[in-house]
Image (cartoon, rainbow, N blue to C red):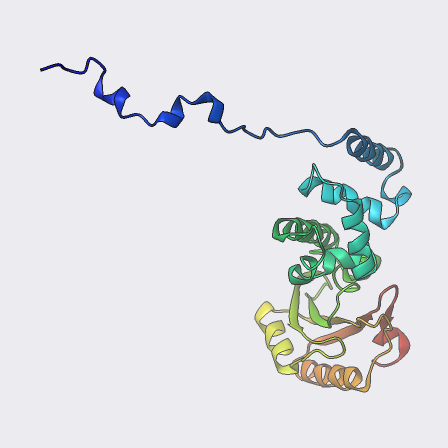
Length: 255
């Protein structure tokens, strides 16, 4: 009886391991085209030399998108985002489900944009928290515009202050539609008691851009003022944030 001299393990190995003619090529990562690398570097240099003020919205957005899509021509994506939402701020403020409607924007890109938005909010918030509101009023207005001016729906928030008018809490109370937000005066005052707050500033936005108060805004403000007064809590102001300006109930005589 003749025995096979070849080891069993080699005899049973699949033939394709040794068939070099049938080997499949492996796609190696490639560098982006030189024109994209040059465009990206030019944008970065301009940003370093002149800052964001020297760049239109879509170019600043390109720099942000390059962080998520380093090998992609992001210029048409940036332009499509600006066309859809209007400006840089509204792009960052747009909800993820609307951002991904733009070609080239996936969930990862949308999440990165929301991180940029959250960073801007936190930076603006740090300038007003635990500080006297009266001496940092401009920072308070900047913060309100940063967080609310570019929303597509109405949002209502309350700034809670202590006896020295130091901002101790900033809380979003509710979200609404493009022209209405539900507000519950009892909940606003109840939360003030929980925080041991002595004063309030109400803030909400008008997505239309016009900060003129509606009859409902005036009525709601009066209800909160009355409920707060009954508990010796002072309503300092109600700010309505438009796209580029704001209206103060105190300054315009509504309060």
